[in-house]
Image 1 (cartoon, rainbow, N blue to C red):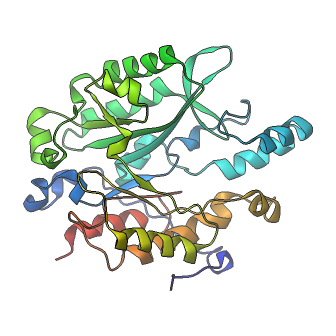
Image 2 (cartoon, rainbow, N blue to C red):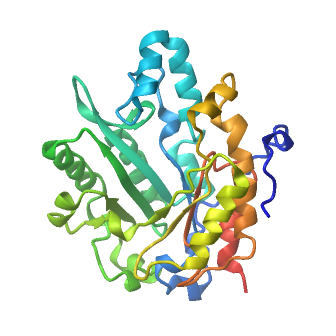
Length: 322
């Protein structure tokens, strides 16, 4: 049974945790510093960049035709609704990193008439290179922290656009990029020795084959419940956990609830944060409470509005269970 399935129970209980976890990896027990990163618990954010979404931009390629038609018919009024249900994070990349987030869920697209690439979710967000440089600057200040960048949705990108993105990644992170190595050797002590701080997962086989600095998306399977009800989310996460992780890979558990068109209409004057965020976090915390880390344990757990509740501390606590 899940913690609760009624958003009304938590509407007025939006506790935010602002603890500084900016160097939590360097403070892990020595035993865990020698473990592959797939065997430790890592907090992540869902649609990590969505705090940058801009109401003044067009509807993004990731949006269904129904959304495009609504915005075409009703203009800014409809766009505000899209915005309210597309924003999944309040914190900047730097703020997320300071709180302890180490996995970023990234979706990128071209924009008509613009040479740059942009983050997208419903609408367009910030230019990709600007955000990557912000992340790189943070890694310079925290040389023992390791970050996962998961480029898992790449919209309307031709080969030249992919090469542009890869060139930006190589230029920004340079020697900090961890090349594809045996996953069993991706332990913190190994990465520290090499000066590697960033693992990039790129979900495009053709591009990955030409760049040893990019990890295939196959190394990062992700369980997306795709439901609107918290008990169903917990049940699906439990079912996948019981079934067991695929060997030799990292593993993402998505502690998120996904709105449908019906959901948006039912709560049309509200937002994803108001309706789903804390209820999902409370329930993913419930899911985690009897779990541990290790080859068969939890690895990367992600959520919306990661500062809410005790999401990040709950994930990090898994690394200190006896």
